[in-house]
Image 1 (cartoon, rainbow, N blue to C red):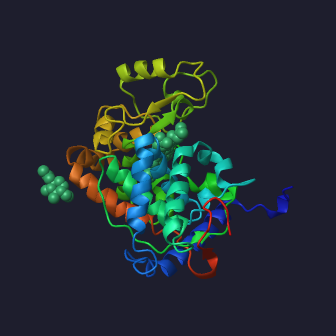
Image 2 (cartoon, rainbow, N blue to C red):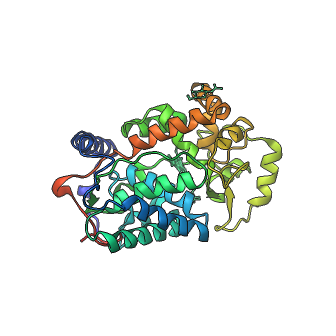
Length: 331
Ligand code: HEM
Ligand SMILES: *[C@@H]1O[C@H](CO)[C@@H](O)[C@H](O)[C@H]1NC(C)=O
């Protein structure tokens, strides 16, 4: 049962979340380090990489799935593996988290098992997720980069704040910038991280409004143009009676490769999500899209820098956190 009096106004909620994030970020920044497990689990990077390599041989889906899982974990209550907790009312049961990838969860479960077998109770699920994310990106053809470690796992995972914390495919540039700024990320960081959509898929319901005129539908706040031939092709992929399970590639050009092809598809107006295409449509962000489309090194450098900032959001220290024994359950 939910008591009405207990509900916070959205503005109060946002203020509370920002407050918590700021406090946590300041406290945590000094604690993270690349060699955090040097004495307690010196092989952790090799163990995680082995689990990633094996899982990706079975299914590529785990690569985009894991990258998205890390992003959602960090934006909801900070990078504390709260997204992995399973049970009634968990994060998975709300908003965008309902389509997180089971393959990604399986990858983290396996990596944790490999790590526990060598160093029991030493490495947090949040750090394993951060390492696995680096490894899926590099194994998909993207940059490799050092990962800061020392995050603790959160003790709480609830659906309560999921919807307010994550961006949606209909967001305008201002809405995207505002949400990312709340997490300490700039517009350039946001555009570089959106490059994560160079791999992976989206379900039809996330962009079908851009393909048809629906009777009585409210006009979208954010309606950037779509290439006409591409639009017709996508009507084939997602007919009006599309199945809820049907998906399309977010980067139509090179969907299995982590490269700057995503930005080139935006230049061709072949971005599927309105929130992707708006980055090219809006003059304030277009030059960055053009820069990343022309220079993959510039994209990779910006992505690596933004991933480091993403990985510092709301890190738990002290009694706020623990090293979870099983990633799907608090101890
Ligand atoms: C900028 C705001 C963003 C919005 C509005 C957004 C929205 C979405 C949506 C709607 C999907 C498809 C979900 C589905 O239908 O199942 C998706 C997938 C995905 N997102 Fe984002 N996203 C954003 C930023 C990011 C960031 C920052 C990353 C990581 C750095 C990311 C990584 C991914 C990946 C890899 C997928 C594919 C997942 C898979 O194939 O399993 N996204 N995103
Ligand atoms: C591409 O970007 C990198 C990194 O910012 C820079 O060093 C390089 O000079 C750029 N290359 C070109 C051709 O502009």
